[in-house]
Image (cartoon, rainbow, N blue to C red; front, side, top):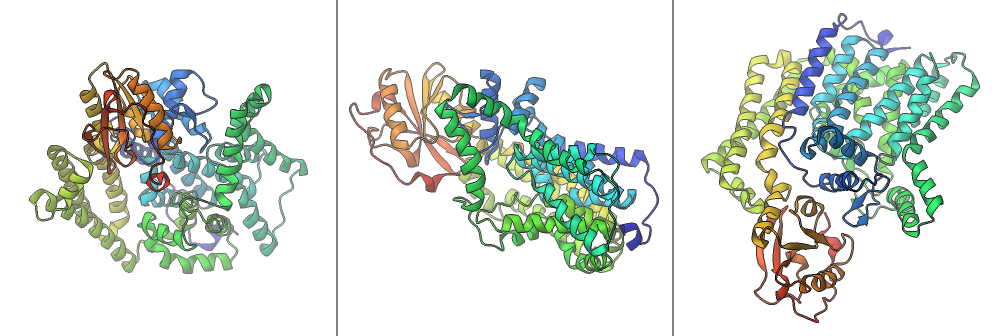
Length: 574
């Protein structure tokens, strides 16, 4: 049984021009501000640092963070960034292009999956539901792996469901397996779409469906294609390991495939959270969609009782994803992001009816009023001096007064426009107001909000200050550095390892700096200060990402001094 049998027909066919306008709108909003900011923590600087090294060194197989191998993530996402730079020649654009394109692809696939399972109008509601959820825009506007991962998992899910619901060629099984394989070497959980076979098999059993005739060998295509997808990266890596027998490469392979994948899931050492953690993720980052869950439970239960195939598949798979990540002690908000497009598809057939209900309209209108009112209040209170929150923000991040005012003006303007949209469309057309308000939010983020704090968040300001202090030709060594420091550093620059203990970095940096004491400086984190720095000789450079940074000239490092073990560095890790 399909959604079309559970529900009355929902609306007429939508024209291609409607979809074209929708995609242009989404593309313009997501692309707004492209090229106006630098990579900022978390994650963005390290990926761009590795991608930049690939371009400059010509060695793309193994990503590096400075002089060390970067073994926390496979290099596929960094390949995409490096490839984008090779085409556009601008890192500010290139580092965001993969996420932008992946976001648009995810919207298209989500809509088409809903169209195939229901109708064209339902497809529009599925895409709209995904668009308005905060987490989608946050990831599509960030230079992180997760949007690309979700594009791969959604593509795999789309192809697999297309085959399972209407087998018309093993090419869809091949695409599903290949996309899941590429997703797995993009980020280890890319195999998740293959779990769709579980709710599909259960639905077949409870609904007593007879599967369409298909050759048994066709199912072999799925694992073969999956292995082919993983071979995009694993094959050249393993070939190089077999060819060279390099012990460093062997350690890298073991670290990535064993510790950073299996052990990170089963025995996480970072981001340890309670079992209920993802409930708060849904309640916040999936707004405003999360507000509709109380009204969706009833229709979903009725659809499951009537054995509606689309609901069984989408909800069943989403539940498996939630259980999979809840079982691991390590949890982050982006981990369950792959389930969001499927849940939007599951919700879409019921949204036209829900959005006609007064209580639903009132709740969504209250959400927009609260969002717009909060942004307007924050912006105006900061501009008028009614609250010191903006002063504290500027102090913590060393944002100049002019940029702070620019940020507050944008904040107030976005809030005012959201409230104006609510007043224009009111509760009866609250869906349109939500879509336009979300577009305004992400456009303002790209054009005004992020650029206003960019110099401080990206560490560009502090690294430019370090270069001015040292002079144009002096060499700067980095100790206790973060990826954004090395990325934004103005050459000539030297680093002494990223994961190396601070005492080891200091001892190597001290010998290096004293060898040319008048033209070499050490730039270091205040918390990583060494007792070998002569008292009163360190100069404060500035603050970035809530950390203080200092510099000392090589001649002010005590000869023969050995830096002892310093404070617990793990406590200061990002």
